[in-house]
Each structure stands twice: as C-alpha cells, then as structure tokens.
Image 1 (spheres, helix red, strand yellow):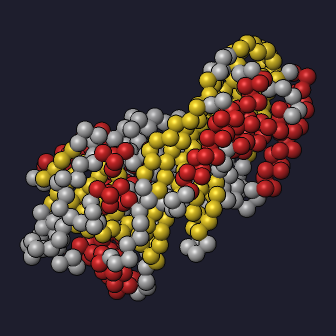
Image 2 (cartoon, one colour; image 1 turned 60 degrees about the vertical axis):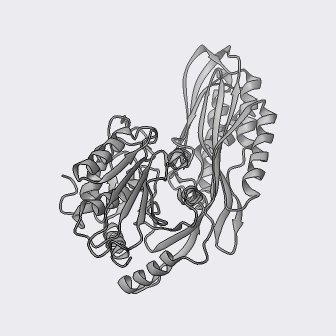
Image 3 (cartoon, one colour; image 1 turned 90 degrees about the vertical axis):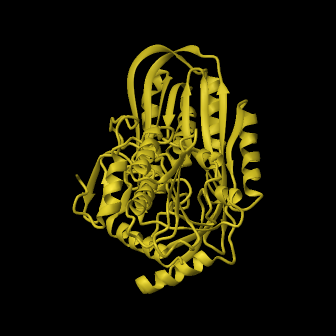
Length: 480
C-alpha cells in the first residue's frame, strides 16, 4: 500500500481504499456500495437512498449512552480535474496517489481530498469501537460538487442528532460557522451550421492555476474561458472568424485552467492573426505577472479546408456574450475580508450547432443572487440564448449561541496552545441544507489543510490530517 507507514494509520488506510474507487460527481455508486458493505460487515445500522446517500450509525460507547448523538458529515464525490496532456478515464480509475514530503497528491489529476479526507476520518472513527464517543450518525452525501443534490434529497428520518460536525473544510484551525448560498445558471444558444472555408487555426489558453470557484475566487487567478473570449474578440478585429468548436473547464465550481478554440479564417490574414496573438500573450502575461506565472497563449495554424462552422455573425454573437459575462468577485464584505457575491464561468462548449456556458453563482446576502441572475439574463437576451437556473441552495446563517463551537474552541486551544479562527466561507457547504432539514441544528465545519482543491495541484497535508484526526477524537471524547 502506498500510504503504509503514514501516521495516523487508520484514516490514511481508509483514504487509500477510497481512492482505489472512482468517485467523481455522478459516479459515486461504487463508493456508496463500499460504505454499505463497510457498515454491514461491522453490524452497524445503515441506510442508503435512491440517490446513493448513505447514513451509517454506530452505537454509543460504554459511559456515553446518555450523551447527545453527534452527526459526522462529508460527501462522497470529488471533482475530477486532469493536468494538460494527461489521458486518464476517471470514471474507471481512481486517483493515483503519491507522497511528496509532508503532502499527498495524485499523479496527473486532482486528489479528491475534498472530500475524501472527511470520508476517511469518518470511516476510521466508525471502525474503532474502543474509542470513547457518543452515538455517531455518519451522513455521506452524493454529488455535493454538482449542486448538492444528494443533501437536498436526503431523508433525515434516521437521524436523532442535532449537533453536527461537518468535515468539508480545507484549512486547519479554521472553524467555519456560516457560508454563502449559490445556484447554477446555464446559457444555451442553438445555431444553424453553415459550410465555411479557410485556414484552420487552434487557439489555446493554458498553464493557469485553476482552483475552487468559492475559496479561491478572490486570489486574482485568471479564468481560461474568459481570457479566450478576450483573445477571440481581439482576433476578430483583425479578420473575420468562423468558429468550429470551443472546449473549456472541468466543473462549474472550478476556475478553468485551460480552454481551446478552433476556427477558420482567410489564409491571407494568418500572419496578422499570429502577430496579434503574440501581442496579446505578452499583455496577458504582464497583467497576470504575480498570479499566473505559467500562463500560455498558443495560436497554431493547420491546413486549408472546408468544414461546418458557425457563421461569422453567430461567431460574433458568441464572442460578445463571452466578453459580457460577469465573472469573478462582484462585491466584498469588507468587515470579514471575504467575497460577498461572485460568479464563475466554469464550463464552456461550442460546436457548429450552438454553444453552452455554465456559471456558478455565490452570495452571502439576499440580493446578491437575484442581481447576478438579472445580469446573466441580460447577456442571454442579447445573445438570443436561453437560460436555465438550477441547483439553488441556501446559505448557512451564523448561530450566535453554539455549545458545539464553544466546546471546540476550548478543546482546540488546550490541545494546540492557540485559538482557532471562527469565520464564514465564500463557498457552498451542505450545512445550510441540512440545517433547514434539522431545525435547531448546531453545526461547525472543519478539516485538514488541503491546497489547490479541484485541480491537479491539489495536496493533502499529512501532518495536518493527523492533527485533525486527534482533534475530532477529542471532541467526541468530551461530548458527555
């Protein structure tokens, strides 16, 4: 086993077992099956619904029979992101793990520490009946990364607990007690293809960091799809273009690290287009000098031929829409130093029959989402596109009186000699949905250090995982 020898052994053993099972969003059935088998083999009470959500229940340890149950919550799915040039079918293969000093990563892909670390900790806790603990109610949901549909459809009837420890955070020592709400908007435009003739050119925006569209939206990182729109807009000022196809992004809640377009143009404009691309590359590298050191803009020529493409007018309409889309931080909460409202163009596709753009929206204020949706509706109307909004989920309101938070703050300071940071997060957590389903729910979200989630650079910090494991055990121990 690759992770043999890592400490603590229990959660890393389960993390490696999880990573051996493909579990991208929409492909979690095998991991759900694994969790059900885990429970059945140990005689644990367990439930699985039609969506694939799993609830596993372990009885209280001796001496904890009268303690209030604690819900442990995480999600089974991961965002599957591949490094450029990597060919890997993540519907059939899990992440290939490697250790690099004090971090754990995956070769050529995202790691799935979000939220595999949570699932591993939870399984390790359930697996050890000798641990001092109250009744544990593990809630493992599906498809958190694609609209939290699992949490929405979860039947909470088996749950007695009204205290919940969510393990879907990525910064050790940070207690998250509130989060933004969100939604997903998809713009679609159908078009009639037409034959076009010209020189084939392939435009690529590559080498970007990408990352999580909530927690890293304020880091100044470039969005490859948005940059592609800017470049295409400049190129069409040089020569008429007929777009053949566009592909960008891996998930609506991940900042796209690369995007590619193919188009036809008159061969006589080839040099002018290449020169303009060189100029734009230099300008963009200067613009993102301090945040995107590896930004690359590539324009390559192919042969001359005829193909089904978008008309020049449809191409222009698409580029105009792409340039008009709101993207990034729209407003800040200056008191907390966090984004208040933001959006991210996460998925972009185009062929000769039309195009689709999917945008994730987040806001911690009531008016934020409606304002963004109005702006997107305006872009959609101008482009003659249709817009569909789905996956609307509530924010998680701050609870002034929280016995769980107070206990955790006391334990954390005693264990680590410093105070935890209590904060909100500009990202969606399932806590808001579950709080609606479980009135009076007292909840805090924590987790080990995981960097660059939703990207091939994702790393789980080994020592931090160990400290988080010990902290969670102590929370359970002091719960009576």
